[in-house]
Length: 458
Image (tube, rainbow, N blue to C red; front, side):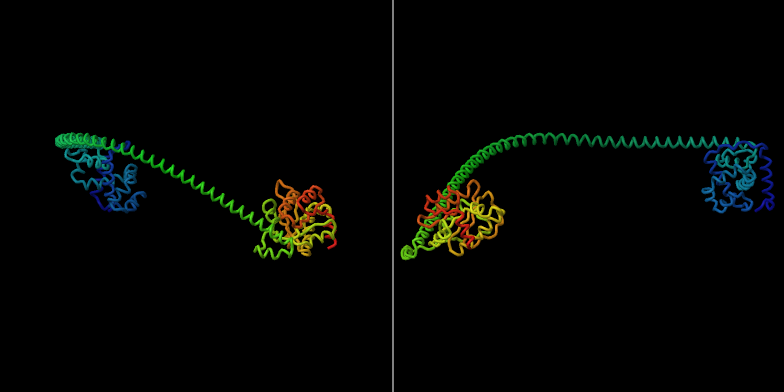
């Protein structure tokens, strides 16, 4: 509804305008409750104002429902009321008319005694009659007084509630104290009984611990005696086992020694009989001797010399002479054994080639000689020059290397001493000491040239 369509409103608005002071003063500071009431009244009055007559900021707020206007557009409404007197007067006219008698009293500058001070201050702020600031100040004081009275009343109620709770708590505490005194008396009686029971149990525990210590001591003593007995038994058992092992070792050594001695004796006897020739066939049949698998030189080789790798253990036979014909004659004897001082021969015959080539050439040569004469051939090298991976020795040839601490000469003498007396032994070496040594044991020493000439003839 427009201003021209409502003459009563115009009259009221004119009255409000005539009551407004000519010179504007500063906006008063409203209490929060009064400010919220002013915004609520103005939001409700905006409903009757056409949208195109409202200031631009309020047009969007005017589209809200009245209750949402106050909540969402409160700051905008308050700012427009403070800055637009014409809008405030138009809204005040509607608000005052809606307030009835209270609005009329406010326009006259009089606040009824029974009126709400917040409502009086809000209407006075909007209508602004003569003395409106006084009305707002009085209402503000009343609001503050009501607020203080409310706070005081709240405090009084809080104190009264606290007193009531204190009285209740005191009564409950008295009841609880009585219960606690009864409980304390009961607990004292129980504690006295428990102390007596603890004393009795402590005495029983001490007696039990004393018996346990005595039993532990006895058990420890028995364990000590048992441990000592077990230790003595284990020591005696170890001693008997050691004696048994020593006896078994001694018996084994004796058996092995007897077996080796028997084998050596059998080999020596068998070879001696073979040396005698076919005339001893009847005697060998009478003695029932079987041919042996190992010869005396094999026993010496196992005990005092090293064999090259991959060397076959077949035996060979040879004999002795000073020239090739004599060598052939000696090797033709039954069961002849040819022993060759290896490096003594090779360094005399093939000194210009390497030691490896010397060994291979000599071993190959005596292999052919062994195949021709069927004699036993043993080639001895000094172990200081021993190498691994030699090719296999020919059939009937035994290749030996002296062990550490022994020379090839000593090994040759050991081989000669191992043979039985009467067997034809031929030793090839130009070393005079070797020749003299083997001659004293019945062997036939020949110079290295003899073998070299025989091999060159082959």
